[in-house]
Length: 157
Image (cartoon, rainbow, N blue to C red; front, side, top):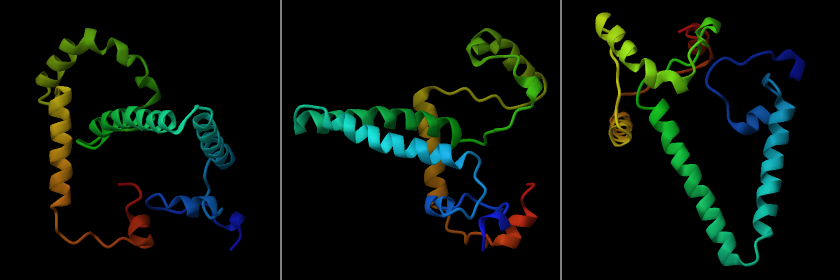
């Protein structure tokens, strides 16, 4: 099978090696691969510039710790509740930095239309995320069989 014959594979994202093999149309594939190569070349070189192994290990641990904090924030924002990813072009009128100033109006509008408005503290949001992850892990129902036909039928939702 040649690369030009395969235009699109429908379904969940395939493993990285499958994407690198050329069997899927990936936008800006060369830029993505270049970025990965640059990061995995630059980071070890940066660590190698530190004077001793103690500082190298501490730097890597600190780096991964900071990244894990950011990862927790991403998990809170994306995994605890359904997230609407796509927004129409006309919806770019309110930057997130102005949310606090219009928050009472948004809450009142949600109340008026009986629409749920969830606002949790960071601790509560993490608790909610972990609870939903635990419930998902305890779900022993057999998964829906997925194959190419199933994915093709359910591409539009």
